[in-house]
Every structure is written in C-alpha cells, then in structure tokens.
Image 1 (cartoon, rainbow, N blue to C red):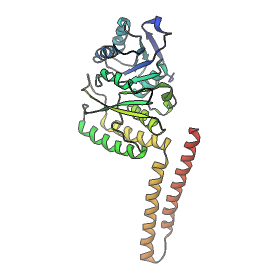
Image 2: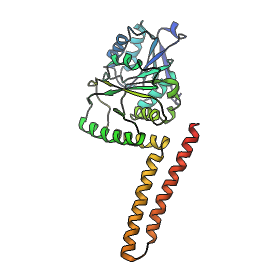
Image 3: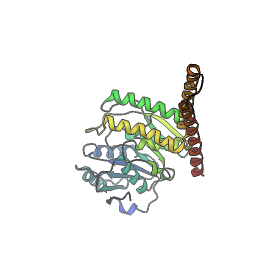
Image 4: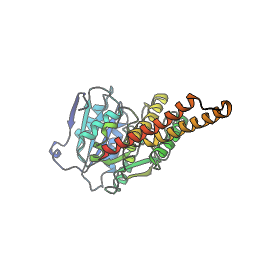
Length: 310
C-alpha cells in the first residue's frame, strides 16, 4: 500500500459491511487547528442528504495532534462511519490522496482540503451532477492563499496552456474540491504525483481521456493555520504536471506545434542562406530534418497512446 506503513482506526464498526455511496476524503498534514471544525461542518452539511456516506481522514505523517483530533471525532461521531488512516511518514498530498482513494468504500469520492478553505456545504451540490458526470469540480471564485499575485498570474498562464493542450475550458485547474467516480479514478492513479500538483493531474487525466467533467462556482475562504505553498517549487511542479499529462495522453498537442516551429525556422534559415550564399547550408537541412523527426516522434507517441487506450 504505497510502500509505507499505515495504521487504521475506524468508528462505527458495525457499519463496516454497510454499502457506502459516498466517501468524503480529507487528506491532512499538520491541520490540528482546522480539522475538527471541518469535520463538524461536513456532518452538518450532509445531515439531510439521502445518501450513505463515510468520512475518511488520511493523516499524512503529521507531527502535531492532527491524528488525535481525527480519532476523537471518529469515536464521538454517530451520524456516519469515520475512519482514520495514519501514515508513518509524510509523503505528500498526492500520496495521501492515492491511499485514500484506494481505501474508500464509496462509489463516489469527494475530496476537499482539511484547512477550512472549501465550505462543506458545497458537497451536496457536487453530488447533484452524478451519475451524469464522471468528475465535478468546485471552481474557486477568489484567491485567498499566500503570494496571491504570484498565484493568480501563474495559474492564469498555466491554465491557458492547459486549455489549449486539452481543448477544454478549465475555470480552475488545481481546485482541491472535487468529486469523482472512484472506479474511473483508480485507472489513472499511476499518473498522480506525490506533491501539490496531484489535483491538477486528476483533472487533466479525465479531460484528456474523454470523461464528462463539470465545474461549479464555489466560495474560497482563508485557510486556518499556516500555508504550505512554496512559490517557486510548487509553481514549477504545476507547469511540469500540465506538460507531463498532455504528453502522456495527447502528445501531438505538444509535438506538432514544436515540429512546425522547427521546420519554419529551418525554411527561413534556408531562404536566408540561399539569398546570401546562393545555396543551402548543411545546417539548414539539419534544422528541417529535426523538425520532421519531431513530427514523426509525435505521431509515434500518439499511436502508442491510442494503443494503450484500447
């Protein structure tokens, strides 16, 4: 199980064999201040919903009292089963989510952050769109994190790139509030990285493979506690994730424009060489050949991707 030690604490043991419709997954790392209020808010939001649900907290190797807060809530909660998975070491938000999705019993998994930024009252709204959609995301209407100017600029640029590469309109590429069909997500867990860009990967995996994805506007609140966002490292990982996923699933979107640019550069260089020297240079031929080879690599990659989809 991810190659790392875990321990499991469950409440409502008599409900273990009960059919669960929805798993509400909370990955948490050092969120002792926010976790209790978030769990209470979830139970209140789901009080009148006609679905059988569970709450699954994945403690990603926290060094504070996060696991103890979750355990106390699990022991006291009577409204629904609450399970707590404790990881022996911190592996990252993506690793915690992968573990939680595998551990989930619900046919639909709802994920939100344990820092209080996403209102739990949005969960019933996400569930309204199933089973028509395969994934439903909360598109944030504001930016409340640290370094807001950098976040807004970087997210806008990378989101525009993702929209072009996927051919889809994406209001919020890295939202942490999302619901999806568990069986469909299990197919793509192999591409989900350990770090913060995991939610971006989950969105792109569905968009680039023809799944029905829905966005709904959702409020976004200031987080409780200290932010773990690293402006340089996480922005670079965010960009790398977009390119990596598109290369996995739609490689021609990258290779074809790149090949066109190289071939155009070779043609322009060849025209310049012909006008100035009266003949083509070896370097002109090399550049144009590189462009055609790039196009060939893209076509080959597209064939491989199509074969693996079957």
